[in-house]
Image 1 (cartoon, rainbow, N blue to C red):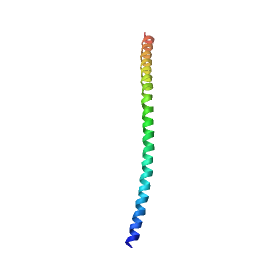
Image 2 (cartoon, one colour; image 1 turned 90 degrees about the vertical axis):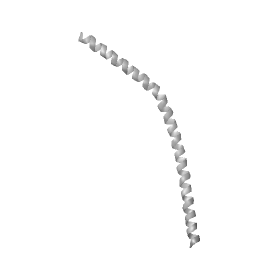
Image 3 (spheres, rainbow, N blue to C red; image 1 turned 180 degrees about the vertical axis):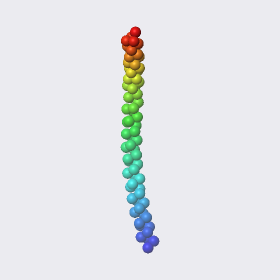
Image 4 (cartoon, rainbow, N blue to C red; image 1 turned 90 degrees about the horizontal axis):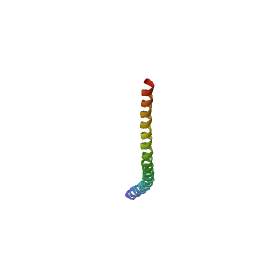
Length: 71
């Protein structure tokens, strides 16, 4: 009886170990994706800053146009 319980526990341990290995592989793949996304975000920040500067300039120009029209 004890031998059967030990064997059952060993099977459970092996199953759990296989699950852990599978999860670790998934975590590594996710970490790779996260790093890739972080690099893209970092690259996009430059473009975002340029766009914000352009929008600021547009707003400035719109205010100047509005002031000129009001005169």
